[in-house]
Amino acid sequence: MTSASTVSRATDPALARTIPSLDGIRALAVLCVIWGHGAATLPQNDVVVFLRANLPGGYFGVQAFFVLSGFLITTLLLRERGKTGRISLSAFYRRRAYRILPALFVFLAVVSALAVTRVIDGLGPRDIISPALFLRDYWPLDGSWWTGHTWSLSVEEQFYVLWPLAVILMPRRVAVKVLVIGVLISPFVRIGTYLLPFVPEGGVTYMFHTRADALMIGCLLAYGAGERWFERLTEWIFARHLQWAVVVWLPLSWALTSRFEGVWMYTVGYVGDALAVALVIVWMMRAPASPFGRFLNWRPMVHIGLISYSLYLYQQLFLTRHNETWFGGLTIGGLLALLLVAEASYWFVERPFLRLRVRRERAKSDAAVVGAL
Image (cartoon, rainbow, N blue to C red; front, side, top):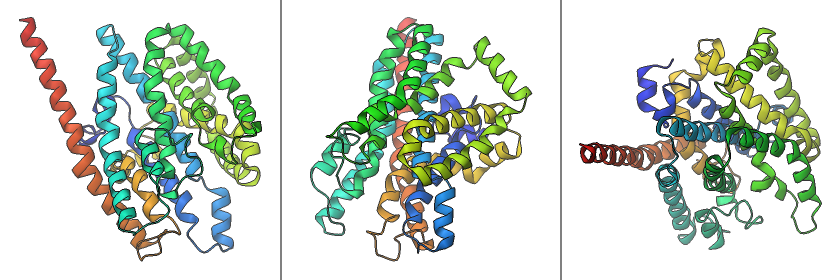
């Protein structure tokens, strides 16, 4: 379903062979973040204001990342249990560590060096310690811009810690019911958190327990894939062309988010957008040869998806009014500098550690085979 070159360069080799459009959807997600942050650095004329009000921003890009994470991680866990009869927590956490930690720690080292040399200011010890411990979604909520975006990594890492245990402990039907209930009560959790007197303004946007519904929707998608009830449901949807509802929903939701902000997002927007992303994933899995599917699997889009983690990490240094150099803001210089740094991070940090992980897994597997002879 995907080309050999795409498979060989995928960030998730175990999934790329069976899930088309994966990296293309990642690319769209990170491009939304780049636009959302970068647009704030542009002159705020009527055109820019209109585009910011009607195009998806960083909040939607992160929501798409969350749905993807829930779907992909749960797919990997269920696939491992189906293949071996068990889930190895140590192997799972080791794979996540190879994937997440090297690039993040190098980024934190770069930011620390920039702060020490006074290239950037406003960065305190807590702004480095908190992301390194994956606590940025709760502390500090009033922290520095330079590492502020790591709140989403903290949300995902907390999910990585908790969810594999839940998959192991809960039977499939119980897990599905828990996920459905979690999604249904999520707007009430957000509203309740918002009403707490000690939660700062905007804090609901960043916390694990107020944003976990997008992850849960991705998990539900993974549990449903291949199940008879899920196949019947998707066949019913696609037979009636109801998947096109996302083409209406998403622009409407983006406009309502711009107009009503938290009133819309906390109640309906977050859940609705996550469901729309899940439907797009199913759609593109079913129709990779469609015009949109071909666009997502277009080589440049695939490559942006491959470096999306590094792009997400480093865009914070460039797409901000705090960067007043020629490579700051949503400019040609800013985008080229961001692309160059992200490419360096991918090729010299991410990719070597991914290869090291694969080599060690193969060596361990070979040793197990030899020991069994």
